Length: 309
Image (cartoon, rainbow, N blue to C red; front, side, top):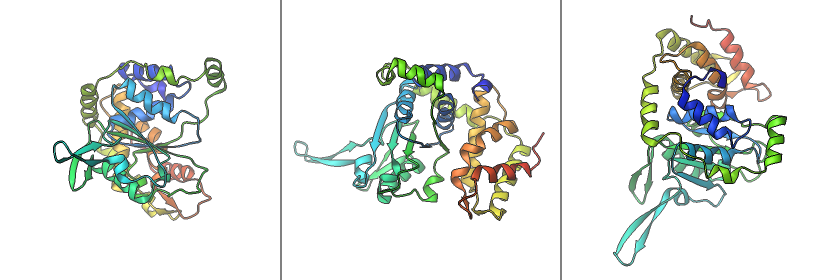
């Protein structure tokens, strides 16, 4: 994936973060695509593979504020949104913002939070605002959620409903590092201290400008129609119980535009879409047979559609 990227600023960010996260280039690139597409990302992976380090390094390299939520089943919505506290000196209630009022928010083990707390997060992701005591507070821009969950621990968890899964632009895994990268990690030790000393490569205004430029990237009618055909086939396929939503189509389009921009182009090509579909689509569909691979179903649908020239 990194071989196709030509934008020097993006390459600089990847290289900068990669100094602390050995062998995680793909996860870094996909996270950056989500940020610049104005989306959010769900990381499903085992503990100790660098999910927290990824979130911290992104905030440092992009010079954005960082908040962390460690989800438990007694976590309340006000624990993440903030709450109003009475000030005896002024005789008024003052709003004390929670961790959601940051640019990048790591929501660790999101499926351990109760549905009520998950819904508070959903409002923030969907509306870019939080409501506390009847008052609405706008979230800072850019706003990016990195949520994580462990794929094997289900005791005491509350699985995310389909409506909330659909809010995540991508679902990825970080995976184990390659042998040489892991060897270097073991030799040099933890890089957590170095993460906090990372210098900023891009400022907030640059990020917002880059997000606007990405939305202007050209995508032809032929590619749009190809995406629409793919979406409609997921709704008609006998193997699929729940097909893709219109929001999924937007996610495919926006991420393809971001990837095209990363690759130094101002237009989308079919390869941009194909390369990102495995990360944008699978978590949005439900299969009738849970023992069938979502990836295989998606690939077979794509193979039945003529790729636009």
